Image (cartoon, rainbow, N blue to C red):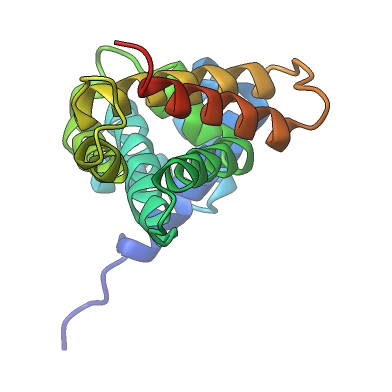
Length: 195
């Protein structure tokens, strides 16, 4: 009879959960493998066995962030109003950032040159999902000569900036979600008139 695996997928998820909690509480720079292991009720050996290094653990958090976004953005349903659909995709990004500020920090705000290559492919897949939300606008000639890819880049930049403003405590008046809707609608609607 074979021995059950001590370091399995469930423990890997528990370690990622612990790392996310600790980053949310103290920031990426304060992340310690000992604290992650203690929070997950295991040893640092488990982290090294499952991930290989602190850098790889942070990279796995980046993958988690991008896979989460890639899953959540397509949940919106395409309608006859592609501007509203794009804005809805932006609000999914807002929910992700506000509900998972540690993952936002790792994947967007504090992505390091060392950890970025570890989740670049996952980021590319998530971004490709966002690009698809702009294809109906491109087809209808509503992007002012931009490609869906270019429009998605500009949209993503605005989403990242809005998320960072909100997460660092800047009041987005009169209501944060309304502020996002107004900003994203202005950008996407303005694509048609600006080249």
